[in-house]
Image 1 (cartoon, rainbow, N blue to C red):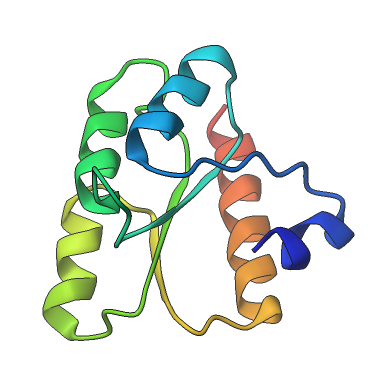
Image 2: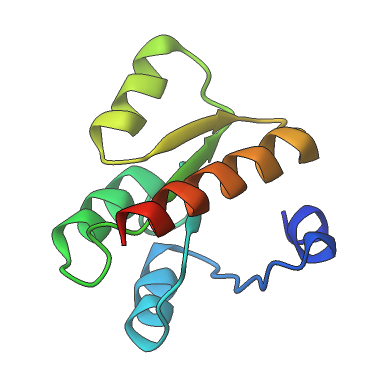
Length: 110
Protein backbone atom coordinates (compact mmCIF):
# COMPACT_ATOMS: atom_id res chain seq x y z
CA UNK A 1 0.00 0.00 0.00
CA UNK A 2 2.88 2.33 0.78
CA UNK A 3 4.19 1.86 -2.77
CA UNK A 4 0.76 2.77 -4.16
CA UNK A 5 0.04 5.75 -1.91
CA UNK A 6 3.39 7.50 -1.42
CA UNK A 7 3.90 8.37 -5.13
CA UNK A 8 0.47 10.05 -5.03
CA UNK A 9 1.79 12.38 -2.29
CA UNK A 10 0.04 10.68 0.60
CA UNK A 11 1.99 10.47 3.84
CA UNK A 12 1.80 6.87 5.00
CA UNK A 13 2.24 5.76 8.61
CA UNK A 14 2.31 2.00 9.11
CA UNK A 15 1.38 -0.14 12.09
CA UNK A 16 2.21 -3.81 12.57
CA UNK A 17 -1.04 -4.67 14.31
CA UNK A 18 -4.21 -3.18 15.76
CA UNK A 19 -2.65 -2.31 19.11
CA UNK A 20 0.17 -0.38 17.45
CA UNK A 21 -2.41 1.38 15.26
CA UNK A 22 -4.32 2.52 18.36
CA UNK A 23 -1.10 3.82 19.86
CA UNK A 24 -0.26 5.76 16.71
CA UNK A 25 -3.78 7.19 16.45
CA UNK A 26 -3.41 8.40 20.03
CA UNK A 27 -0.36 10.43 18.96
CA UNK A 28 -1.48 11.55 15.49
CA UNK A 29 -4.74 12.40 13.80
CA UNK A 30 -4.86 10.51 10.51
CA UNK A 31 -7.04 11.86 7.72
CA UNK A 32 -7.95 8.32 6.67
CA UNK A 33 -7.16 4.80 7.83
CA UNK A 34 -6.71 1.64 5.78
CA UNK A 35 -7.03 -1.49 7.89
CA UNK A 36 -6.34 -5.06 6.91
CA UNK A 37 -9.08 -7.34 8.20
CA UNK A 38 -6.64 -10.11 9.06
CA UNK A 39 -3.98 -8.63 11.36
CA UNK A 40 -2.12 -10.22 14.27
CA UNK A 41 -3.26 -9.62 17.85
CA UNK A 42 -6.37 -7.60 16.93
CA UNK A 43 -8.19 -7.97 13.63
CA UNK A 44 -9.27 -5.04 11.51
CA UNK A 45 -12.95 -5.48 12.33
CA UNK A 46 -12.33 -5.12 16.06
CA UNK A 47 -10.02 -2.17 15.47
CA UNK A 48 -12.61 -0.52 13.24
CA UNK A 49 -15.28 -0.90 15.94
CA UNK A 50 -12.94 0.53 18.57
CA UNK A 51 -12.07 3.50 16.36
CA UNK A 52 -15.76 4.23 15.80
CA UNK A 53 -16.31 4.33 19.58
CA UNK A 54 -13.57 6.92 20.12
CA UNK A 55 -14.57 10.57 19.88
CA UNK A 56 -11.37 11.52 18.04
CA UNK A 57 -11.78 8.87 15.32
CA UNK A 58 -15.54 8.37 15.16
CA UNK A 59 -15.74 10.20 11.83
CA UNK A 60 -12.33 9.34 10.37
CA UNK A 61 -12.80 7.59 7.01
CA UNK A 62 -11.87 3.92 7.24
CA UNK A 63 -11.18 1.52 4.39
CA UNK A 64 -11.07 -2.17 5.23
CA UNK A 65 -8.91 -4.27 2.96
CA UNK A 66 -9.18 -8.04 2.88
CA UNK A 67 -8.79 -11.25 0.95
CA UNK A 68 -12.18 -12.21 2.40
CA UNK A 69 -14.48 -11.53 -0.52
CA UNK A 70 -17.79 -13.13 0.40
CA UNK A 71 -20.87 -10.92 0.67
CA UNK A 72 -21.08 -11.79 4.39
CA UNK A 73 -17.47 -10.74 4.99
CA UNK A 74 -18.04 -7.45 3.17
CA UNK A 75 -21.21 -6.80 5.15
CA UNK A 76 -19.39 -7.59 8.40
CA UNK A 77 -16.81 -4.95 7.50
CA UNK A 78 -19.39 -2.32 6.71
CA UNK A 79 -21.33 -3.20 9.88
CA UNK A 80 -18.11 -2.69 11.87
CA UNK A 81 -18.11 0.91 10.67
CA UNK A 82 -15.94 0.91 7.56
CA UNK A 83 -16.75 3.49 4.93
CA UNK A 84 -15.47 1.20 2.21
CA UNK A 85 -14.45 -2.45 1.91
CA UNK A 86 -11.89 -3.29 -0.78
CA UNK A 87 -10.84 -6.80 -1.67
CA UNK A 88 -7.32 -8.06 -2.34
CA UNK A 89 -5.61 -7.83 -4.60
CA UNK A 90 -6.59 -4.18 -4.86
CA UNK A 91 -5.52 -2.18 -7.87
CA UNK A 92 -3.66 1.10 -7.42
CA UNK A 93 -6.44 2.84 -9.35
CA UNK A 94 -9.20 1.49 -7.08
CA UNK A 95 -7.24 2.30 -3.93
CA UNK A 96 -6.41 5.85 -5.00
CA UNK A 97 -9.98 6.51 -6.15
CA UNK A 98 -11.39 5.26 -2.85
CA UNK A 99 -8.95 7.33 -0.79
CA UNK A 100 -9.65 10.47 -2.83
CA UNK A 101 -13.43 10.02 -2.67
CA UNK A 102 -13.49 9.44 1.08
CA UNK A 103 -11.15 12.35 1.80
CA UNK A 104 -13.28 14.65 -0.39
CA UNK A 105 -16.47 13.54 1.37
CA UNK A 106 -14.82 14.03 4.79
CA UNK A 107 -13.75 17.56 3.89
CA UNK A 108 -17.33 18.39 2.88
CA UNK A 109 -18.59 17.10 6.23
CA UNK A 110 -16.02 19.11 8.21
